[in-house]
Image (cartoon, rainbow, N blue to C red):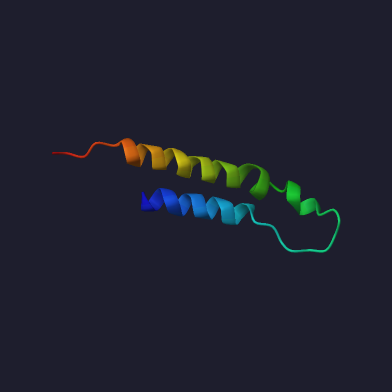
Length: 58
């Protein structure tokens, strides 16, 4: 669960933007924010569900 949580945090950090005063920032449409960050977040959420539902050895 800790790894899944770390993946979710990393994904949201990848989505985080810079604080500019420009009205339009073309960096919003970068590969990192549009593709990579959501994939990392989604994999973290899926891994979290797997970690919750996983039955350990008895």
